[in-house]
Length: 588
Image (cartoon, rainbow, N blue to C red; front, side):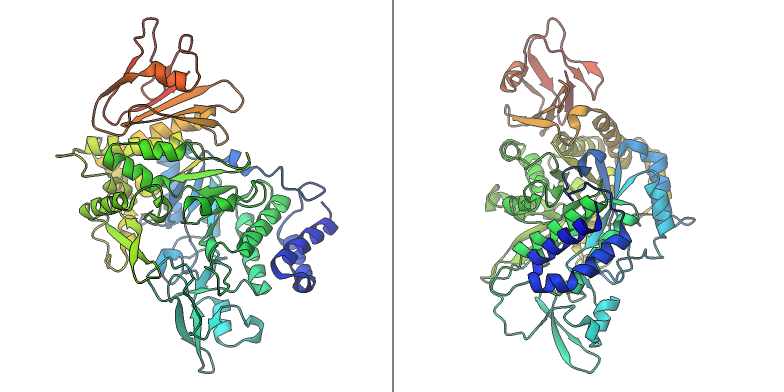
C-alpha cells in the first residue's frame, strides 16, 4: 500500500471525526506518526478484510503483572517462570493488566502509558513473556493520572497543551450524563498561576478525562496504541472506551464519534500491523455493548460478553439454566472477523448492568444478597433521580459460587466452580481466565483498606512459593481447581469445534443442565457440551437432544473428552446420567 492511500484513508477518518478543516491541518502529522511506527504491509487499496486476528487465540489468561511475586525475580519474570513451569501451552495469550507507572486504581490511573513500571520489570521482561505467549495490553483510553506529564503541562498552562483536558464552569446541565460511579463528575485542580480549574473526571479525582475534541489528544493516544503493538501486543483492550467523547446535552457515552475513533484505530492496525486486533471494554447493556462490533469489519474484533458472568452466577444460585440458555441462543456476530470475549471473572467485579432486562430486579437483588453473605461487596451507581442501583458485585468468582449447599467440602466447591468455567469454555468465542480463577483463589477479605477499595477483594498479590506449595497438595482447593481447569483448557485448545468461528446450537432439556452443541466450521465434527448446574444426579433422554440438533440418533458414536471414555455402545439405552456438577464434552 503506497503513501497516497495511507494519506487518503487517514484524511477520510479525521474528516469523519473533526470535519474537513481540521483534517486538512492534522493529516500530515498522523501520516508521519503511522509511517514512523509501522510497516505498510496490507492490501493495495487499504482494505481490512484480511485482518482476522481471532484465529490466533484460543484462551487468554488475565493477570496483573504482579499477581505473583517472589524474592529473586521481578514480578513479570516470576509470572513468566510460573506459566512456563505450570501452565505451558494450555493458554495461548496473556492479558497483562496495566503495567505502567500509575498513581492509583491498581494501575488504571496511568502516569506514563509508554514505559514499564520498574517495580514490575522491564520491556525486556515482557519480550521474554512474549517469547512463549501472545500478549494483550490495556490502552487506558479515557483518562490519565493527574501526574501524567501532558496533564501537568496542561495544568501549568503550557500553550502547547491547551484543551488537553476538559474544563467546565460547574453550572452545566449534566442531568443526561451517564454516571458509572456514585462520585462527583468534576474535580478541582489549581493551575501554575493559581487559577482554579474544574475538570471532567468520570471515574475519580486522580483520573482526568482527556479531551478527544482536540486532535492532539487523538495523536497522543494513537502513538500509545502503536507503541503497544510494536512491543508485542497482538490484542489491545480499549479500557472505558465508551466514555471518551464528551458532548453536553447527550449521555456522553457511545457517542457517534467514539465509534469513528475506534474505526480509525481499526483501520490503522489492520492496514499497517496485520494480525493485531482491538477489544472494547464496555460494561453496558448487551445491545449497546455489541454496537462496538460496528458492521463486523470496521470496529472491534472482540467485545466483552458482559452478561455472561451474572447470568452464569444466577444459573448456579437458582440451579436453573433457562435464562442463560435463552440468552445464549440469541447471540450472533456480524461477521467471521468478530467474536465474543467470554469471561466470568476479572480484576473488576461482576457487572450487573448488562443483566438488566434479562434478570428481574428481584433476581439481581437476590444475587447481590448471596454475594454479601459470602463476605463480598456490592457497588452502586446513581440513577439520576436520587436513587441507586447495584452496579457491580465485588467477590472472587469461586467465593460467589460458594455457600449453595450445606457443609461444602473443597471437592464440591471445586466441581461447582469448574462446571461454571466449562460453560464459558463451551460457548462460541475466546475465553478469558482470570489468574485468581485459574488458581482457585477465594475472597481476599484481609486486604488493607478493603472497605474503601472493595475491588481488591479479588486482586490479592500471591507469593509464588506459597502457591507452588499449595498446588503440590492434592487436597487443597487451589490444587483441585488448578489441575481440573488445565485439563479442560488442554482439551479446549485441541478441538476444532471449540475454535472461535465454530458454530453453536443451544439445546433445551432439564433446566438443571446447560447444553450447547459446537460444530467445527469446516470439518464435520461435533462436541455436545452438557454441564450439570446442580448438586442433583440427572437422567434424561439423550436422543431428544440429538433430535433438537438435527443429528443422526442411530449412527453417531460419542466419546467423552473429559473422562476419556466412549459414551455409546450398540445397546445404548438413550438415557444419559449426569452426576452433580459434572462436565461432559461429548465428541462425535
